[in-house]
Image (cartoon, rainbow, N blue to C red; front, side, top):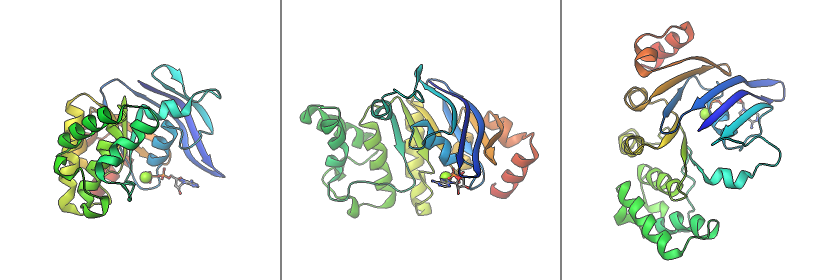
Length: 240
Ligand SMILES: Nc1ncnc2c1ncn2[C@@H]1O[C@H](COP(=O)(O)OP(=O)(O)O)[C@@H](O)[C@H]1O
Ligand SMILES: [Mg+2]
């Protein structure tokens, strides 16, 4: 589904990504771990062209999205993105947050969009909050709404950038549960997280990044139980 070839990204002199190769298959859950500043967010942001790669190619569903004539808006609609900060529209209630983009951008029928939004809220356990405003929700609830809002666009892949890092500890679990359910349903997901329990349980493949390079990748068992690279071993010793 996603095919990244020799992706590099520089910010001035700073080489943040160094010729990254990455493939994500349909239905696969790839979890990216690694120290702060290693380029994890930059990879995700390059995947949906929030950042322009310095060099390299990215293919999404066999379209070369780094081509000069690619339809970026159309591509982004197929990639849901969830950030650390929830970024809900504060002046809209939950239902409006979920329906505004499908109705305005995809020209969905408002009644259809509303039915779909309610089903998605049910899926993330928040049907009773449809009329609430973001400021009246907890952080965990807001993040679940943000996930539902991304799903409302019917994406083919979901990108998560540390979705639980801004949450109080007692709210982390409810968000991870929603993500785990999504993975079970077969959603293709690329997840940057420090939640190693989630990575071990849900990932099909774990990628360890440091210094803008994929240092090691493998199954959760390979990475967590038998890391080969000393950088991976050091990192896991610190976080586990
Ligand atoms: N917009 C930007 N301008 C300049 N430097 C940036 C920008 N975004 C990220 N960086 C730098 O790129 C490096 C990798 O950042 P990032 O991808 O956010 O790492 P991670 O998500 O792994 O913590 C860091 O050194 C960061 O300071
Ligand atoms: Mg980051």
